[in-house]
Structure formats: structure tokens, C-alpha cells
Length: 109
Length: 117
Image (cartoon, rainbow over all chains, first blue to last red; front, side, top):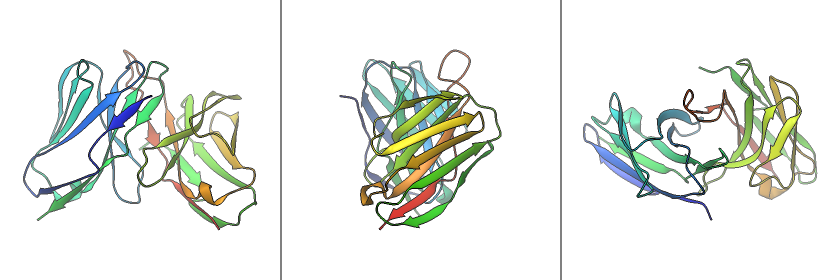
């Protein structure tokens, strides 16, 4: 079966760095997405990786290793507004998105 | 922000009643999706559409039907609502699937919270 695994919850301190991991097993691979979802709101797109390596976008970076079925989202200089759930999703060979259950990130002052 | 609206945003209904949720987009995107989101689960695809009158089932389609008679509207119908269909429903749109020119990113509506008593 197809599976996306990510930690349920993480806690970090304002100003620090946090890494949210995502491992996947899917039928084929056509890209990996990270979305941010604040409580009670819709998910919003953060990043897309289809080739191995690191993609940097401001305070957020996303890394992909296709051979290991592994990705991480790196958040630097954490701010209170970064408190949210972070959703990992993989597009399989049929171009269907398989979603992880999300990682709830709690930022403490 | 992508122009996508859902209605109603909140609905409480009784078991056995029909319910229709509407998704309206102003972006002229080809693909439209209905997801449900429940605690402890990832977003789960109910149905999707790749064009007018072209729809297909997702992983949790039982008990749901959809229609897309116009590019901008995608309707989700629960013919006879059950308590297990209590959830938050998200509509999403995308310009394309992922490829060389597009990431295939989804734009989501604000969600419709449905409670079936």
C-alpha cells in the first residue's frame, strides 16, 4: 500500500530551527509537496521537490532524497505565526496526491 | 489568492437527509477536487474532475456523488447523510498535474464543516 509518515506533533522555541521529516512509500513518484495549515484554515502551498536536493525559499527549505523515500522541511528563525500543521504529500505515478496526516508544530516563546 | 469559494461554510443536518456542497472557482483551472479532513487522517480524496462532465472517484467515494456541468462549479452531494460523514470538506483546484512546467500545486477553498446528527 501507499504510505506517508510524519511525526504527529513537534515543539520548538521562537527563533530556533526545526526540521520536520516525512518518509514515503508510494507507487511511483511525480513530486513531493509541503503545505502549511493554520488551525481552522485551508492548507496553503509551501514547496515542491521533484529532484534530489535542497530547495530554499526564505526561512523555509525543503529537501528530497528519492532513493531513501525521504524529505524534510526546515524552518529557520521560527516565529509564533509558524505554529501550524505541516502536511507532506506525494504525487504518485497516476498523478494522485497521497497525504500524510500532518505534523502539528507548536512554537513556544 | 486563487478565487475559490465554498458554500455553505457550516452545516448541521440529520442522518438520512441529502446535502449538497458547492465549490465555485474564478480561475478557469481544469482540475477540481473534493477532500475530507478528519483528525488523525491525511486529506482523503473523495472525487475529482478533470473537465466539464469528466469526473472520477477517489479513495473514499462511497456515499458521495459529484457533478461538474460548468468549468467553474463542482458540486458534492451526500444522497443520504450518515454520522460517519461528519467532517471538514475542502474543495481544491489546480491548473495541471505536476510536470516540467507546473508544480501541480493545489489551491484550497476555506472548507465546509458538516455535522451529521
